[in-house]
Image 1 (cartoon, rainbow, N blue to C red):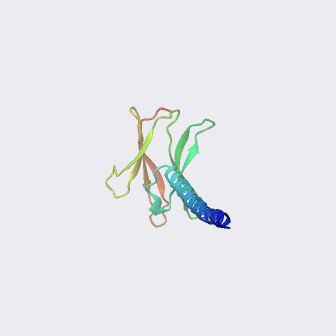
Image 2 (image 1 turned 90 degrees about the vertical axis):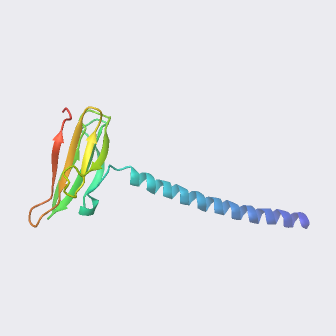
Image 3 (image 1 turned 45 degrees about the vertical axis):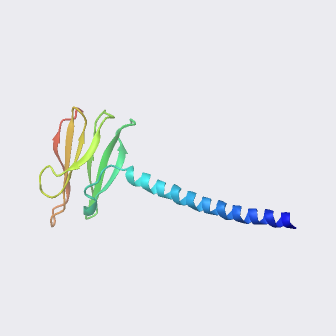
Length: 137
């Protein structure tokens, strides 16, 4: 009888521990997935204006570009920070024009592209403007 109670107690406590382990594991796995998904997209300083950002394949290669899209009166408007045939680049954000709207800068040691966003103004649609581009085609 005593042995049965001991085994039963161990099973009960072990089962609770295993359940707690599963819950903690699930929370960590889901949290990591959300964090990785949130950090996996390109920088998007224009989110407050309804702009969405995603990595988009460049041509038929494995290269990617940062593609920015927004909608205005049923039209999709896009802008891209495209590195051409180059894997090595970094995206960062800086307000290069000092207009209060940050710009996306794609750069490496040799090249630089500055992509700006102009929000809609009345009936004038929003637009993406390349302020400078020294990337080779």
